[in-house]
Length: 103
Image (cartoon, rainbow, N blue to C red; front, side):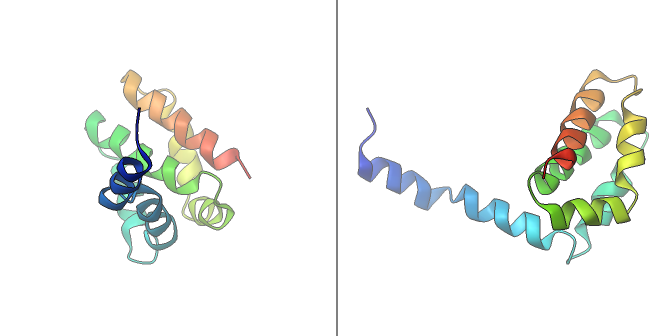
């Protein structure tokens, strides 16, 4: 059974919620969103599925970031990945599209 001190210590060592907020609000500002989107076009399946994952995390429940993704043409790329030969690419594309459809 976890103690309150143990839970607090784990939060201080791994401040995941803060890191997620920074990614959501700043990835586009530093030019990272366009780099990640460009990886969706790469021939390597490992790059494509790894690019879809942060897109999914950034757009989920964040309407301003969803709009940025729409403006940058991300959705047609993700829809195209639904026909990818690699099952992990298809899975991550679905994840990103589902996150973008939430408001």
